[in-house]
Structures are given as C-alpha cells and as structure tokens.
Image (cartoon, helix red, strand yellow):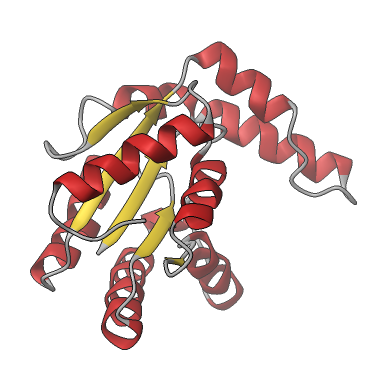
Length: 183
C-alpha cells in the first residue's frame, strides 16, 4: 500500500511523512524527487521540470511497485504532482499493478505557503541558489492551489495548516477505515 502525500511546496508533505513514520515505523519513505535528480545527471530536462519527462513518471511508478513487491511494507511518498495527466499516469500505473494508493492533498493558503517557503533553506552553502529555488517554489503556488480541483476523485483533501500530529491522525484513521493496515 502507498500513502501519497501531495500538496504545494511548503505545504508540509515531508513533515507529515516524518510524523507518520514515527507512528508507523515499518513503513518505507520514498521520495520520487531523487529519481528526478538522477535523471538530471543523465539526460537534459528541456523544461527544467523533471516531471515533464515521461521516463520520470514511469520510473516513479516502477520503483514504488518494486519497493512494495520486494519489501512487502507500506510506502510513504511525499511528492508534489499537480499536473492531472501526470497524476493519472502515475496513479493509474500503481493501481494497474494492484497496489492500494491512498492519495492525500494538503491544502494551505498562499500566505502560509509563502511564509514557509521563505523560512526554508534549500542550499545553505549557496544563498543565490537558495533564492532561485524559493522563487521557483513560489511561482508554482497558483498551479498547486488550483490542482486540488483537478486531482483524482479519491484524493482526500486535508487542512495543511493543522499540526503534523493532527494530520497524521487523520491519515492513519483513513487508512485504517479502508481496511488496510496502518500504525
């Protein structure tokens, strides 16, 4: 089973997954961003966004399936995917492989997202790069906020301004209610 935590940059995806892992220590954490970083080292990413690479989307799904098949453990995935076509492609491949996918989207106001992004350091040794990353994340806010209405029907919307503890409780309750195991 996969618990996919989606939302804008700064919405608290990784923080929520960290909290879930405390309560569900047998789970694996898989960050598809790493697949993107590997691909960037191998091929050119013309748009600058590795999600635009079909190979990235295919590898994200294939690796998730492999983790479940090999290790037989739940997988927690903190990853922003707001393009409805890309989300459909990835989640469709996971479902075709017979994997239960619980998709959660953290809704957070623009003001809170901007404040969280401004408070983060992405590359502490490179202030210029840090600012570029912050700018890129902020440019994506509008698209991410609009995505909540275009994601798969079974997506569960959560108030990302709640505490990670409250959110983890809501996620685990949903997973338990679906009849699959969880913390």
